[in-house]
Image: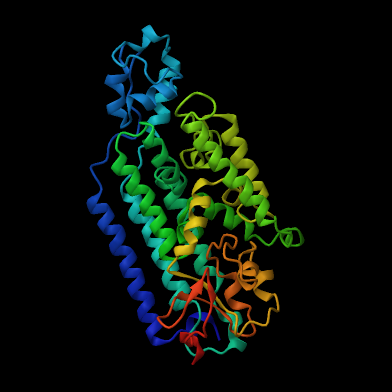
Length: 400
């Protein structure tokens, strides 16, 4: 018996309806997409001023001055040649700023795999009527791998680096210091990505983020399994990630450094990979190190650096659908903790309120001998703190 033949009639309806909904979302995105502009950045000369160039790049004068290494209060009407900006420097900055012009369609494309992940985890992963003895059939990896490949190829290399979750977490703060032309646009992007992290626990990170997907695919290779059993302590990884986030804010608002608008993440932004453009050696090093470490460390960039990873970890407390553990059934055998690539499952079993990140990878959902773990929304008669159930849940669809 295979997974696909074990699905019930209702689950086939869910599957078809979900695929149709995904197609409709992307079709709507195509319809709503503004007319395509030239892929190549426009050319300017040093005889032009910042005030002339910045609007054509969809940025602010402050942001352009910062990228050119000029004071933020520099005269924006003076030709750049009089500010000692040479043509090579201008071309580099123009290409960099133009690369941040994302496509509106990409928001719709991000929503599609998140929808599939949500339905797969809550309704399709476990065939209806299957017993716990058949749990090896549950939550097959093939659909997850397929979605991850789509995320890398389509959300990444085909559609370019912008927009992306990391950018969404940083630009809202850049807007506060005048480095974004539209505050409403960056607020929308931030809320969009956080919303996709809340509707299903970090689904945007686990199922749709192209760089997260690339790390996941590499980690999924059947290599270095013994090393993968060793997990970095969450306290260490989150302290580094949270510390970088705080440092970013301190530099950005010139609380330290004395230069407002300085963003440390610009030097470690791996999403440049999807434009095949590495503006500094530190970006290339970040990409290479993260991908090599992914062979035996689970999502190292997400765990140690990503600002959106930190924001979405905080947002996990509000997630509507997530891994939920019923401690009245759990006998603390440790099966879910061993299957989990982070410390999330173990923390939930231990009753910790601020558990480690859960990327909704489903590895823990097919190993419990007591059926104490499930991915679902909270029932009306239940109370849950960070995925730990305080009352006995209703039977899941697969309980028969």
